[in-house]
Length: 250
Image (tube, rainbow, N blue to C red):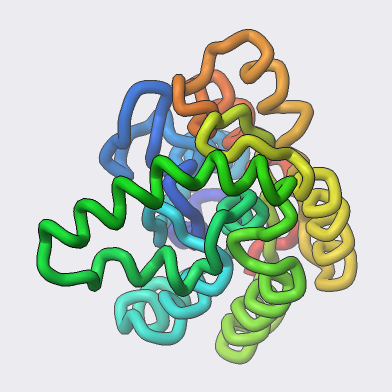
């Protein structure tokens, strides 16, 4: 089919703040420097047809949050899924970070009342987290690996129910140097698990370690040690476009 007769293409991206946060601050999802938009621009050039990235993301999202977005947000299941030609799973990054508390307790902090008590609880949590992680050796993840695998699979199964055969690419867990999460115990096992999940579910895979580690070593990323430089965004966007080019778009 020639480029002139193809319809506009859409890639649905489920992600966390890595998808909209740069080396300085959060940016509007339309910023062309962010990896979903770099991916779309690269694909547009290679396919000769307009490609857009439909981003569904929020700060701190895990694979479980992405599943909830898919099943609870009518714009996602009612508009974005039906028009998607491919899926990028950019969640799983937060999942493997070390935790000081089970996620349900951390997520309950915004519900603490009154506001003065909530602020004290949040400050205490933020202050204590690195100490607790060091003391426990980073044994506790934000979301257990089995749960991450489960929710990623449910996302794909749910989308394939309506869009059979739609291609999927998974971003591997991103390395970090964040003082707020002073443990790397879970990273290597999480990367291996992500590779295994991608193989088992016939998904493409982009390994972030060789892309992100040089930036961490050079100190070119965000000072928080988590979010990426613009060069990293560009490289990841191009890597996703390359991976998607190996899969037939629906």
